[in-house]
Length: 249
Image (cartoon, helix red, strand yellow):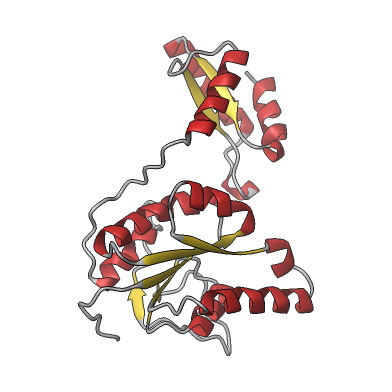
């Protein structure tokens, strides 16, 4: 295993190509990296639609993006997107990469970027198939299973690198513009700030979603005990499940 040098890292790549919730959890890792290496440039590789979120909330110094639809397209489309992604990343000359995604593609990217120090998970979330290789030379523990919160999976690279964990909980404050929009929406619905309960019933995959009838039962009980209004929040693609919950309350 690679022996970690006490010298600070100057250019760090965090590969987090999953969803916005994963980026929120990964922000705690980024915060610790900044505290450990205040002068370092921290770059996130993420999906294009999350670029403004990562930059606006100061999670990373810079962002390199990819289009998920192209990575799921034809072999030619995938090849072009991967080439553009790696080309954009290699110009940073990273001395540390941290692969939080732990996928076949993220391992390919990590290998092609070829930083001196490359952190990955052992064992991998998905077993490596024939001809696949793990480019990491520093191995983090894959916390996040057996009842442990996934947050600790995204913090475990710090332990592998011998970096002190100085902050654990992600802390992202709403931007002033976002706050103003939220207050306007609450006013339109005649809801007082801090006087209602927000419930988000959506998830990226159906297998991660709780059944609508169970959400409805909890909402009815909470509303009855507290006397507070309950607001269902989510994106346009979560409207259907929200309507199913409302129909049961």
